[in-house]
Length: 139
Image (cartoon, rainbow, N blue to C red; front, side):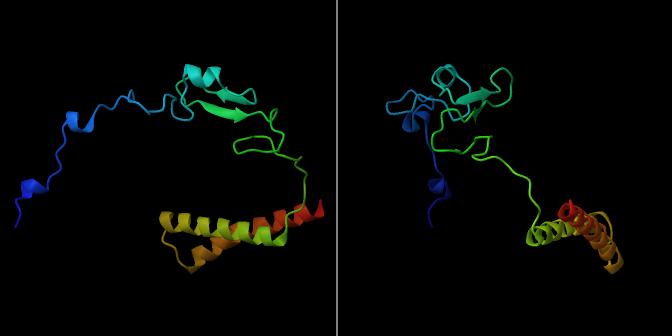
């Protein structure tokens, strides 16, 4: 059986090399979203950098002015105008089912969940969902 010390991985700084990024072929740019002079000076005019003046991460927000093709990932403005509509029954059923399951999980964590409590939770979520669906369909 081999000695257990032989199985350990040992590296010295000379074998691995420095971790400063000054090596040839290493990218000079910062990580995406990191604030520095290069990203601020070479930023596209269609991107506004938010958060440069505080300790929070810097985020680029697309303004949509330079986009000929339409919406891009990260843009806060939709490609076409948002128009109000009525919810479909399928969407209401799935949203209500998700709300019921979430409420049941929270109820199970908070109390001892029995059939009566589960029925009250389901009714407490389903009844307002039906009322809201009826109001949205009517008006």
